[in-house]
Each structure stands twice: as C-alpha cells, then as structure tokens.
Length: 237
View 1 (tube, one colour):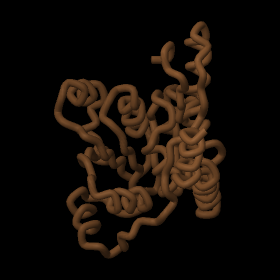
View 2 (spheres, rainbow, N blue to C red):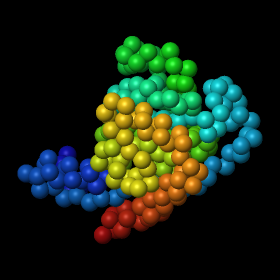
View 3 (spheres, rainbow, N blue to C red):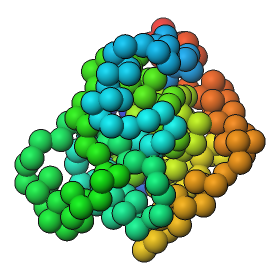
View 4 (tube, one colour):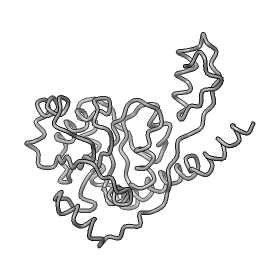
C-alpha cells in the first residue's frame, strides 16, 4: 500500500514518521490530518434513571473509580494496568468498559493477575449508549490509557475531552496527543501504582488545571470542523 499509494494520510505524526523511516526506499508522499473528538458535555443528568441503574448494577459511585475504555487485546496492556492497580493503595475501583468475553486472553489474564481476588477490579462489559458512556467518562476520577500502538486513539481523545484526570502510558503516540494535559506512566514495576497513589491526593485545583489543559488540547488540534476542512481542502486541491 505504501509503495503504490499517491498519498498517505496519517492521523498521527508518529505514524507519519514511522512510514517515512521504515518505507524510505519508496519515498512515500505523506501528510498529517488528525482524528477528531467533540468537547461537548453529556446531555445525561446526574439523576438520570439509566445512569443510576448502571451505577447500581456495577456497584460503583461517581468520582470513586478509575476508568478504562478500549478493545480487549494484549497490546492495550491490560496486564500491566491491572497488576499495577492491584499494587496501589487506592480505595477507588477500576472500571473496565470493554468487549470482554471469557476467552483465551481473559483466562490468561485471570491466571497471571488473579484480579478476581481484588474487589476493586470490575469488568463491566460494553456501553453502547454514547451519551451514557460520555457521562461515565465525566464521572470517573481518572482515566487510565495503556494503549501502546496504532497512532491517535479515539478513546484517548474522548477521555481528554471528558475526563478531568488522565494517566497515559508514556509512548510517542500518547504524548503527542496528551502533551501537558495528562500524566504519564511506564511499564516499570510500581511506576503506575505509585502514580495512582499520588494522584489520589491531588488537589481540586491541580486536577482542574490538568482538565483545562486536556480540553484545550482537543479544542486546538482535534475538533472535527477543522479536520473536515483539511480533508475538503485536500480533496479539492
């Protein structure tokens, strides 16, 4: 595809860099146009019955949980995040919204981490109502993003647009998007656990500052209107 394409549109600067370096012999013609997100608040109110029923069913409370949203695949580093969360001292839950089925990966993860012994770890399945999901993001104390590959991830953009506190795996794809609107962790032993323990005691002012920077990041670089304009300009050229 790289060899034969007239133009490669990359949704990540790091993907563009990868293509230019790894496929240099083909002299690829590339451009960067980001993926997008919206910075609108959810239309769901705090007393919405659907929302309250969901919280009751999952036995979680607003601002008393960390959140993960993403495909249930090894490269999203569920093992690292769950293992580190179990090492932390937080009294908050880890709510995992994913298409989990008790498949081979699930069973391997269970065997390695024994997460079933930690009542804070909660696999809650999928949430297809986008407004409810946005509200769940807004109500999370923090979002944990362990995705390692794939360029600009839509769930990361949605988290930065909705969740006040975002903890991201420190890789180029994530730092490019989050910049100073997020905090970062590595895969080193106890790195994420210690970060969770420290952010549990962040002041409201510090959390508000990170939230403002995250929202500003989305508004400045990832709004759909500007992205659409870039595509229209490209196709009309």
